[in-house]
Image (tube, rainbow over all chains, first blue to last red; front, side, top):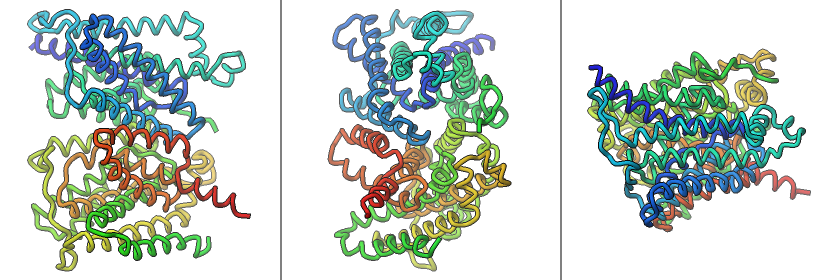
Length: 291
Length: 312
């Protein structure tokens, strides 16, 4: 009974870490630009696919993963330069369609290069499950959770202690005021896309040995990341992380105790209920409209 | 608004509908025309919500899917006549959308996008998982559409029927747009706070138009299911919801005829792209991005602006 609960807990926090990273990606871009980037899930997919490709070329695994993260960051930067910047001050709906177009484009591109099949990446440190109190956890899950924690700490440091991080925070609070004190806000926008992409890419690469990866794996991860970000309150970093873990754990509990078929529906039922009672998520503050 | 402004566009569409068969060489082209007309019904309804009321929905394929499955089940399992099943489906979807409309439409912007997206995905998952009823991922067969004892037998007959449905949708939409409801909606789009200060019950108007657009989607879903003769959960899926929103945005928001144009483009484009074997997804994504980047207001409004400028 207890070991079963522990088992669900392990699978919940592993997925939770992935959703948290995805949600952080949404929040970063949302803060910098007010855009919900529906291509966020594709960064996750790219991270995994590129890591597999580099590793197949014979590169050592750590190098393949780092290169995959860098390449995904580049893709994010390019997306901002090629698609978001030229759109200028388009309305919310057109911007959503642009990022969805980008998402479809990236899926198509990956299909052309690597085909439609599933790919697997070698686990970072073997695949012998570790037994804890009758429950088991894969070493790769520990890697995923560990990476999630490291990235959250790094981001914390980045936004509190570096000039660029502070500039990004300032821009998210008030873009005009940030420009007035000399912050290059366009640059901030491109950096936040690159950073979000790197987060997604890292999550994609580190979880590729567990979930396998294919051109269409990003859609659900992206949508659930959006749910997690909304759950915590769009734009809130803490909210994104908490939202991600709540989602992962709840999903695992639903799969274990209610119905594994409806596991994937849990996040969406939850978010609708939460939004009805808290229209701006858990950490989103009170809703007021500036007129 | 003068009669020409209100009905001129409809006359043009009607003339195109009547003359088009002269240019359609075979059933393949009739088939595409039927699909365009049925997609246009959804797009015209969705445009009322997105274009006029300024409220996004990323879950309307869910309503279309519910309509399609309700028609399929009522005709196959309970032996209802197809028009009756379609009306019952519309009514059911209308009631469902009415129940969810109030709480969901209190949300704004991205939060509304999230909630409608969630709603669509939940409907999709129910259709996939309740396989004893829906056939799950394999989908289910649907009988033809019979009207007064006559079954629509081929693409040509469907062409006229679907075109009439499309024209009816346009007529209803245009009448709503020009009614006090339409004016209230445009006020809501401009500034909801200002609209409610002016005494408009914004929540009620938004909910009403949400219900209307959901019922349009349901009707088109029922007809599509009968036309194709088959329905699978993908029809209610996220990607289809996106396609529907894209029709509205590409054609031109807040323009009923723009929505029709958008439906035509989004229906024809995949057919053209099927020649780029393997590359079609990539090219589709690129075209989608580029169109919105360069024409954020959509094709028809941009075209109209160009024509107006060139006029002396």
